[in-house]
Length: 200
Image 1 (cartoon, rainbow, N blue to C red):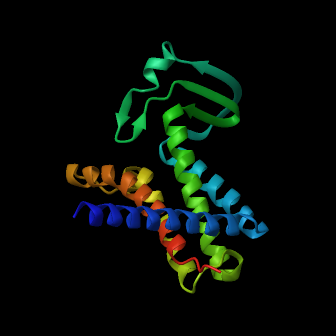
Image 2 (cartoon, rainbow, N blue to C red):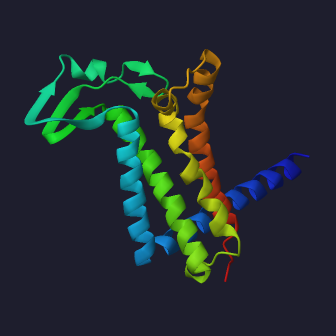
Image 3 (cartoon, rainbow, N blue to C red):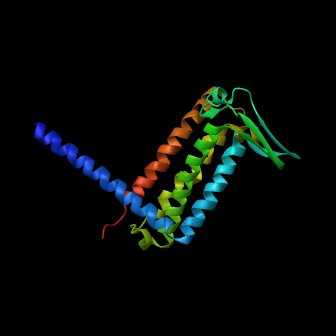
C-alpha cells in the first residue's frame, strides 16, 4: 500500500514538473519573438498604469515638481486601507503627472501586469504562429481571456462610482475576491497553455 502511494506521489510530481517545463517552453517561445516581446511590454505597461489610475494613485494636476514622504514610512507602507490596497507613503509630482507611491500596491500591480502581459503575449503568438512555441490548436484564444477581464479586479468599485451605480456591501465584498481569483485565473491559463505544448 505504501509502495503504491509512493508511486502515485512520484507520478503526480513528474506530471507537475512536466507541466511547468512545458509552460516555460510556451512562455520562452512567445518571448523569443519580437511581436511577443512588444505585446508583453505594451500590454504590461498599459495595465500597470491603468491599475494605478484605478486605485487613484496616478493622475494629473497642476504642473510642478515635488517629492514628499510621510513620517514613519516603513510602518505606514504595510497599513491596509482596503482589500489588497495599502496606504501610500510618498507623493511624486513631475510636470502635470501626480503619483502616490505605495510600495505594496506597486509590487502587486507589477505582478498582475506581468501575468497579463505574458498571457496576452502567449495568446497572440499561439494564434499567429503556433509552431513558434509548439502549441496545439486552440491555445491562443483561451489564454488571453483572463488578461482582458482582470481589470475589474482592482478597479471594480471605481468603475461603479464613475457610472453612478451604488455598490452594496455584498457587491463590494465580491470585488474583494476578484483579485485573488484573477491571479489564479492568470496562472491557470499559463499552465493550461503549458498542457497544450506539443513535445517534439
